Image (cartoon, rainbow, N blue to C red):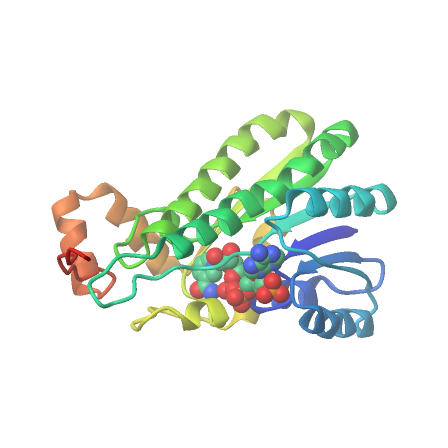
Length: 260
Ligand SMILES: NC(=O)c1ccc[n+]([C@@H]2O[C@H](COP(=O)([O-])OP(=O)(O)OC[C@H]3O[C@@H](n4cnc5c(N)ncnc54)[C@H](OP(=O)(O)O)[C@@H]3O)[C@@H](O)[C@H]2O)c1
């Protein structure tokens, strides 16, 4: 089995790579940090997998396309997990997200995902096989004032995955959208408390692994938070806005000062 995982140098992607690593598996592991990639490569090779690493920024559409097509030529991809992502949180001082933070999260979480999926669509369609997993978030179900741009990126990824699934099923390609709640990682460390029902990355990876093995359309967890976020999306907005404030996922606002 040939598997590509982006964002494999840390967090959920690191745990997924460990889980899939075994004899007979060829892993293509992507991230930017070479030393962290070397670390996960060592772990996976020790478990019997063959590993090809790519120290590439997923926002570099040309570099990622070339790498993916070369990997796919040698090892036709059975499973792509587009997992690499970053976050953007409101600063907490009453001001909004900076434009640098907004454009970075849009570039990595949306364009970065599309850059990884798009090159593999035609090869997979020609083979009439393959599986694509897009890592979104429970934040896709209802935008939270504490991280507006991040939530928007995850909604975009979920929508893209839902749409691809309906199209690609005619070509024998399976698409899953993964919507985790809080998972312990560098990314979630940026998020202020409370992190309801936070779980270790290894546990999240096991849930994702089992969901993908069953080809579930949506792999969303943990259960109560999943239902809670879906309910927030359908109850009246005044009530969900209030609830998000109570749960501390709201954001304070300070009038911008006129700068000279
Ligand atoms: N943790 C949570 O609570 C949570 C909840 C819901 C969804 N998610 C989603 O799960 C995914 C993984 O998050 P995580 O919690 O595991 O975060 P993490 O520990 O910070 O890991 C993020 C991974 O993405 C890679 N990455 C970031 N920017 C990249 C870029 N421009 N090009 C290539 N690789 C890049 C990082 O590698 P390098 O630094 O080496 O580039 C790292 O391997 C993200 O899409 C995130 O939105 C996380």
